[in-house]
Length: 112
Length: 112
View 1 (spheres, chains in turn yellow, brown):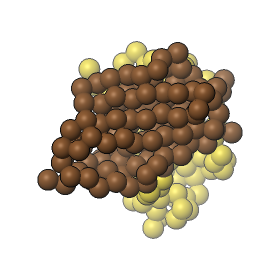
View 2: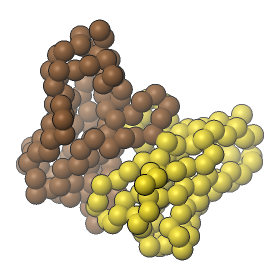
View 3: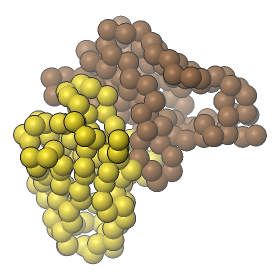
C-alpha cells in the first residue's frame, strides 16, 4: 500500500503569491493533518480534518486555509506569501482520532 | 497548553553504544505518545506509539517507555549503528482535539 503522498516535493514562490499543497492519505485513513516545520524546530500544527470537517486549527493567520475532499485527500492553501512562510510542510494521516499518525515526505516551500 | 521538551538537543556517540533519549510533557492527560525519526530534509517516520494505558513498546533495537505521572517518556536505542543517525522527535497527544504536540527533537550522530 502507498504511504502518505505529498505534491509537489519542492516549490519556489515569490512574496505575495499564492500556493496550493496537496496530500493523499493512506487508503482507509479519514483524518488528515497539516504541519509547518522550520529548520531546527519541531513540526507546528496548522490544521486537522476528519471526515471532511475541520477538527482543529493551530495558531496561524487567516492566510492559511485547507480543505478535505470526499476521497479524504486534502489541500493546504497559503495566500499572500511571506518570506517567513518558507518551511517544510508536512501532511499526516491516521485511521481515526488518536490513532498512529503517518507522515508524508513533505513539501519544501521556499519564498523569495 | 501542552509543552514538550526533549533532552539532549544533540548527541554524538560511538557505534555500539546503548543510549537513551528523553521526552517530557507538561500535561499528563495524554491519550498517546509517539516517537518519530526524521532524516535531513525528509518527512517523519513513525517508530513507536504508546497508548496512555501502556507502559512501554518495543520494536527491534528500540524500546520506548511512558510514565504519565511524571510526564516523561524515554526512547532506548540498543547497540547504536551509524544508520541510526537522524533527528528523533516525540509527540504527545492530549486534549479532546487529538492534536499531538511535538518537541524540538534530539539530533543523534553515531560515528563508526
